[in-house]
Image (cartoon, rainbow, N blue to C red; front, side):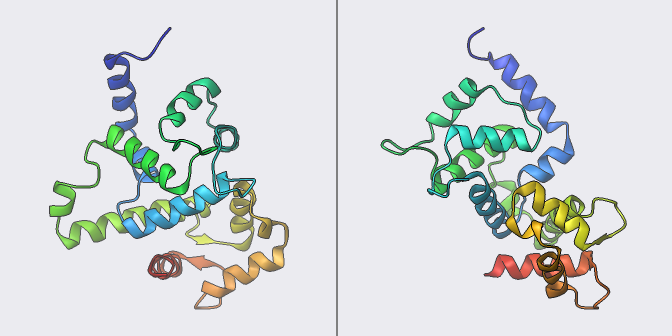
Length: 198
C-alpha cells in the first residue's frame, strides 16, 4: 500500500487531536514532570538495561499497554532516530522521537504561544496534567490511591516492587502525610512536585 498520503496523515492527526485524553496523557505541559515521566518510560522499555530501546523492546512495551503495532512500520519510523552505530534508541533519541510526535500531533512543539502564556495558564495546565496522572493510579475513582491500586499499576509497568505488598505499603506511607493509609490528590501533587525538583 506504500507510505501514507498527506490526507491520511491529516486524518490521523485530526483523530488524535479530537481526543483530549490523548493530548493530556501524551505530553505533560510541565517540562520537569515530562522529563521524569519520559526517563521512567525509557527505563521500563529498556528491558535488558543496555541503555538502548530496540525496536523489539518498544514493540513489546506497546503490546503490553494494549497498542498493537506493525513491527516493520515501527522499525522504519524508529530507524530515523537511531544514531549510526547504535543498536537502538538512546534516551536522547527517545526524547527526540517524543518531541517529534508531539510536534506532529499537537503542532505547537512546546513553544510560541505556550511560552507567552501567563503563570496562571501554566499552573492550570500542570494541575490538569497531575489530575490525569492521578487518575491512572486511582483505578476505582474514589479520589484515593490505595496500596492495592498502586500495586496493580506497578505490576502493569513491570516494577519488581509490585510483588511485595509490604514494599508497596511503605511507598504509600512515605507520602501519606495524614496517615490514613491512602494517598489523596494533595499528597500525590506534593510527591510529584518534589520528584520534579530532584
